[in-house]
Length: 314
Image (spheres, rainbow, N blue to C red):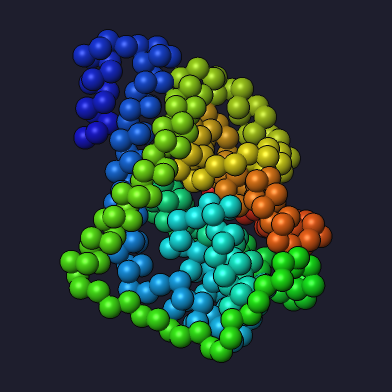
């Protein structure tokens, strides 16, 4: 219904045709669609999140077997709406809580890759099958990446003197009424939306320009099936950039429409959200460059593998 209404408004009421009409049509329709999905999904996940808090998760992860901890930390990343940089404070909290280093890295990888914003946008644009495969691949990268880092015993490369918490963490449970949970979820949704809506506008705006004015053949030539290095190039291009899923997902949609293979586009998105130069600069104050290089290397290889896997099976 939205699509038909926007088409009628642009093409019939305002009589906009050609490249300009296509660009404006894309901008209006995708902005409405993405905003609606974000508000809906964030509210649902935020409501579910009111049943526990970070302290409870940290307490539960404490003293769990490493691989089991990697799985739980990766799953926890799904319900935390953090970009690669904003996940770092909780990453430090995990270290302070004596949670194994590999487990903390599983969270640091999973949070920007698999948060509810990325899932909501993927579902709205590509459907549940692609979303399910993406979540599975993102979890695989975060679980195995964190596990490998943990196995390499890299604790000596933590630069900060983090004072361990004394005693055992308590499993702090939240006791709220239904009305209080709804209010908290609503307030949180509004707060998150205020922080990211501008990124949606910027991302959709750039996507609209590409959609309306850049020929499909141009993109397909360099990132299509004929280029075996397309995924690798997409990841290398994504690392210098910095954005969250709300900003980069509209670009992914347009690039796929223009002929870029889905796996290549998703690898680009994963590199932008999970690996970024600003993240490396912040981490440099916390951990040694050798550990940062290991982290980027393992995650980068995992993302490249996911990109080629998507291109192969789809």
